Image 1 (cartoon, helix red, strand yellow):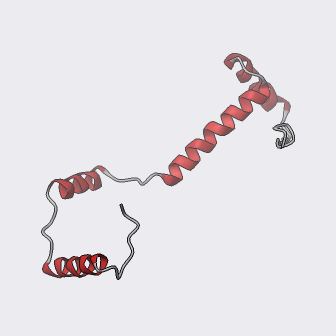
Image 2: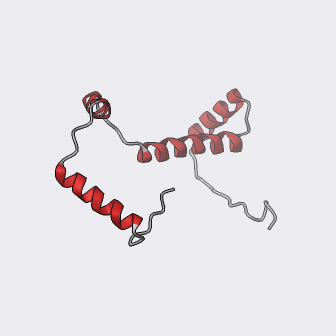
Length: 100
């Protein structure tokens, strides 16, 4: 498939003052209006996608996580028993693991 055939066109109705402002910004950045609009839209898209994929934590949350990594809680006997049972089942071929 030809790259040009794979392209789509986007149209927008703009007021003259808005179009003038966008053209001025494009000229100042050394780009065509189309290049400027595409770059601006891609930058905004990246920010939106990054924001939605980012897990935000407060300073208190971060300090708690670091403390837990530095000083993990002791393993309970119930957890130790479950882990031993899981390990045995895995070693006996009763479970499949994708971890290598």
